[in-house]
Image (cartoon, rainbow, N blue to C red; front, side, top):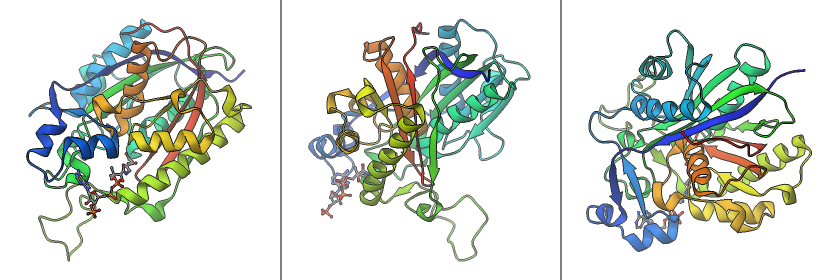
Length: 330
Ligand code: UT7
């Protein structure tokens, strides 16, 4: 039997500084009312000076290991858009901070879909027999790449990290990740981008292009479409129907996207989990952070059939199902 990847532990960490909508509205041409009604966000957390993505990742990772009752894993994957440095990857630093020795460690880059892609990659490591336990982390200090003058992005994104431990197990047991449905469309590469940082383009000035930019309206429409498409494919591959789903945990991009997505796939809106009001959009950290908070709040209970879905820059998207296992909190 090919081993399945089974969720065995989870944890999360937020940075200490809380930023309210009012604080942002005081320096941007915006308002608490606009932010709440257009995004559902009330506040977000931001990394203080010197706090790195690897610090948040290690904090969440330590809690996930504790939750799984493990001191060692065979691989560490970090999904992030904001690595500590462009080179090398952040995962070896995280492994070092966690005292995991010479474990395999690498980053996964798929912006807000990164954690889902990392879960799929970890499942492959387990299915091939390369690893029996994998720590999968989504971590961001997104505030570092936001243009402080851009009200369209500054109000949305926040920092944070979430992590899960996957172990080799049986495809039919609770916690086993179902077949993934993943996709990408590079023709949309300019819709969500930090334009500079790659090979130098002679025409560019030194000051332009280092901040994150997003064409929000188009991205909104595509997020609903593509997550809907991948959800239908993931359910199909798992032999499930939408009525079988107890809880959707989708990428926390915008509350309106999550509600529109529920309508699109025919899921009662109250089955879609959201804590975007408290944390904002934390990009690659969004899914594991939402899983940990939903679990802590009792919104995910053992036996619940759970659907995960994400969409992000690339463009990239994906979905997967699992039955929620009995799991301790780190
Ligand atoms: O995580 C990766 C994937 N990301 C997403 O899925 C995000 C997708 N997009 C969105 O969530 C939404 O498009 C936004 C929240 C980014 C924007 O909401 P929107 O309802 O699409 O607003 P809009 O861009 O159409 O802007 C409407 C108006 C504009 O003013 P005019 O042109 O109508 O005068 C904007 O300039 O709202 C204005 N606006 C703001 N006003 C106050 C944009 N941002 C703000 C702001 N405060 N922060």
